[in-house]
Image 1 (cartoon, rainbow, N blue to C red):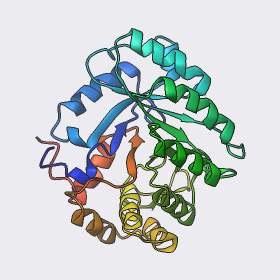
Image 2 (image 1 turned 90 degrees about the vertical axis):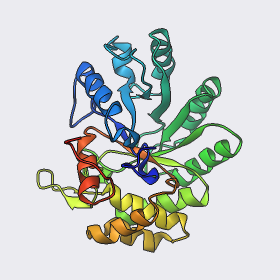
Image 3 (image 1 turned 135 degrees about the vertical axis):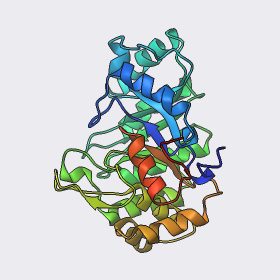
Image 4 (image 1 turned 180 degrees about the vertical axis):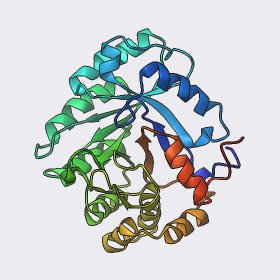
Length: 285
């Protein structure tokens, strides 16, 4: 572990360069990911995230060059077996698989059952089931927690942003989910909207985005026993100093519960972490 990236932040940011709003070409993303892997901040970076649709299209340029990827099931659960086979045939190592098991308003249980059958055939991978923060959420979390307790390598994933206001959970809603995962000893990932460390209003869209620094402080508090109201206060806070102190105090510990998040830019969260003094480094290294 680098002395410049604290243990608390290890693997926090998955490289989602090919996804919106960055939407880099896969060859460009592969080149940039190699640079991230060779950099002083490499410990911060998780795998390169690759959509199943790109595998289906045969767009695998540069991927078989020695680093693992995370497979994103943008074609649904049904498209995952073919994508996994395609990556295996190309000699590309897969570290994790992430896929939505239901749309908003749908019961997630059928999708969880379908995904569970696939997970049993690929138990060497880390699996993340994206649950909508709507109908059936509690039962879905119970299903995932039960499977994980039985040794199945599956955890939860939640959406924290997107192209519509309803895709941004309120601080109270997100706090409730974090505490629910804490109560079930269930790790989780987040996706979308976490572009900066501190909660902020995006002037272009008018949406208020969650800050990944807020999520980190809130998750640390939840892991220490804080309940929903206190966790929600941290998620809503816009004072960077109050958010940094819990992270600084826990910098040498493993990150509890929160596995991390995907970002179309690794440099944006890195820049915020440097400015907040949570990562010791600079781009001139």
